[in-house]
Image (cartoon, rainbow, N blue to C red; front, top):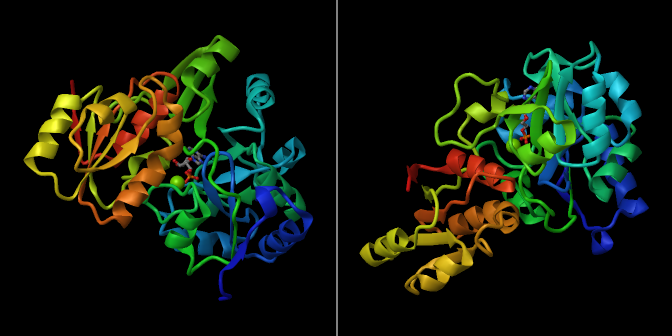
Length: 344
Ligand code: AMP
Ligand code: MG
């Protein structure tokens, strides 16, 4: 195995020289981590079983958790997808490039290794210059799960990737901090219903507005819904730091203040600006920005959880947000990370 090559694009824009180098590594069956608009992905050629096996091993990812194929042009769909409906095409036209993964029937050319034995494949076109240039230069669709060790918070900076996978991948393209910070929305169309298998930045409201159809699944609750099809990956404990995560559903100034006063050691708080301002001083604090807005929570949550681990803190108290719009995806990830949920 070669030492990790860190490729640092100037000002985080796609430049020919390093894209060519990273693409050559992928073409030859190597593993390259790269930025997307959601989180960093760990890329491998979809048609190179050796590389895909190494990818699963590097992440410690269970074999039944399928990989999302990333494309840079719709013509690459023919190799991956057996059929699609006008509605699915419309979703692609509207939301690609962007953080929407569509689960579609796969072709024979897609190895079962990638899809965890399923007859479907998840596909998306990322909205990121570096990711698109890299896929185009490689000339093949690239499977790219989040570039973290399985179960850890997804990486939103190159440093996070190096911490988790530095020893076992071939190259890492540093594109700075990712813009959105949460993984893509995963959907599957069944008849006239769109199922959200994993909520993300393309929200339920956006899907309803675009299609006028019923959108089901994906609801952020602390209980897993039983009657909706889940992305296999969602059944695993996810996104979790080493610290115990206690999630409060809604504004929680007095509850958090009482915890701090009871035991201020080893404690971090992630909360909205107004809550932080009202709390006692003595803890590691991380802001979610203005109450009611979910974008800072989405962008920073994973980085905060990792930083809390780096600080060696044992407990983190997190203020929740209403599960509407992007808040649904934020709460979904918080419930996955939580050791305890305290309701209102
Ligand atoms: P990651 O790439 O680490 O963000 O995880 C990909 C997510 O998409 C996991 O939750 C997978 O279970 C889900 N996924 C990928 N492909 C499929 C598929 N064919 N059917 C259902 N879920 C999928
Ligand atoms: Mg992942």
